[in-house]
Amino acid sequence: SAVISQKPSRDICQRGTSLTIQCQVDSQVTMMFWYRQQPGQSLTLIATANQGSEATYESGFVIDKFPISRPNLTFSTLTVSNMSPEDSSIYLCSVDISGSGNTIYFGEGSWLTVV
Amino acid sequence: SQKIEQNSEALNIQEGKTATLTCNYTNYSPAYLQWYRQDPGRGPVFLLLIRENEKEKRKERLKVTFDTTLKQSLFHITASQPADSATYLCALGGSSGNTPLVFGKGTRLSVIA
Image 1: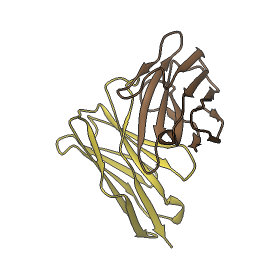
Image 2 (image 1 turned 30 degrees about the vertical axis):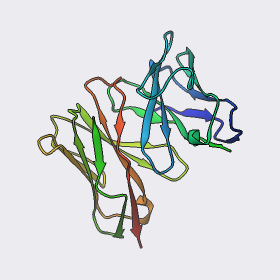
Image 3 (image 1 turned 30 degrees about the horizontal axis):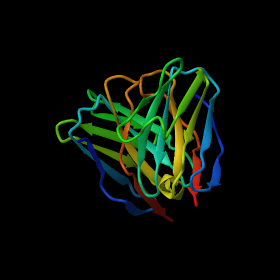
Image 4 (image 1 turned 45 degrees about the vertical axis):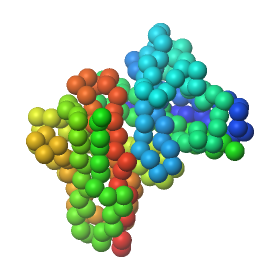
């Protein structure tokens, strides 16, 4: 199993500011995934973060808005830049320990409200 | 584009009955399908994975079926309990474990005592 810690768990942010979310895993993993879950919606993948290379972004998400760091095999950050109320969402990091799809774990999420 | 539909936003059932949740998909050929449970204010928790060559998978009171011809998965909770009340998400995965999952919107299950 894996334990994933996300910080902050909740925050209220001012429009136009940026916030960095941290994701710490208690074991080394190759890939980490960042998702967004808007109110009443399902999870949408933002990007896949590999250690030692640039993150791969999904359609509709760009690096300038959601820069990601992956400095080592247990840690990643996602920054939500120049926030607007539309960015109010839950942001979740996820890992697949074995790469087989059977060992996927999510963090508890970071709940951001932009005012 | 890929589309995943879960049968209803909300489902209410009586305690002790079997809850059946449906996940249908189009424009996708997943290598596997997963079911997750999500409680309010919490991240999703992985429940079961079923691969494209498997028809059925069981885990305790949970049973999942996968029909790649119908492009449908059924998720059953037998002898349901109020503690089973949560949102259940289905997700489709590609041929590699590193392929990102595509999630449905979820079905909110309420088990009434």
